Image (cartoon, rainbow, N blue to C red; front, side, top):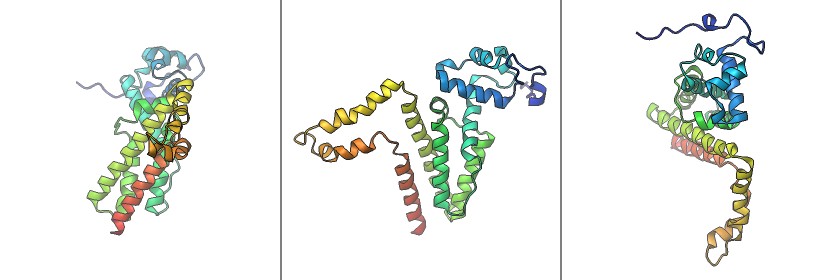
Length: 232
């Protein structure tokens, strides 16, 4: 028999924790995000989360089926933050650029969490609401359903793929990240034209661009391609 889901009101502690807080789903997710930001993935365990909340580790399992269930909740929370206060303008291309930027930024604000969750499919309210909005924008723009789904697929996967890529860079130790950034200046910019003519010719441009995210450019290229298809 499936385990009965207990409503949050019934799960909630009647007494505050040692920190004077009353536990809730939202508080646990927020605390987990903070722990990931401060300690990385290895620092997020039920025991450590319980200590941070001032409660026994077992208390977490009154709200989540396990740590993976908590990670899915974190993923949905990031989608919720991306969608907060978004209002479509009616300009489908501008609206999708805004949404893509919001999703990317929401994950980069929590790089450790992004690396763990951006590849997951949660089926939870905030994720579903964002998908409904994106598909609705494309259908409202006049794309046939088959094309709307194809463009949505490319749009959301591109947004999350760049979130993982860029978040992984931000999640590196500072020394490693800075060493990677210096490679463009210390190695690529010094390659001779006699052996690497194309890199040598574009070296200043590479140094100026390659340590920044390519996501804005990729997003604009995707939207431009979709607009050309719609016009055609």
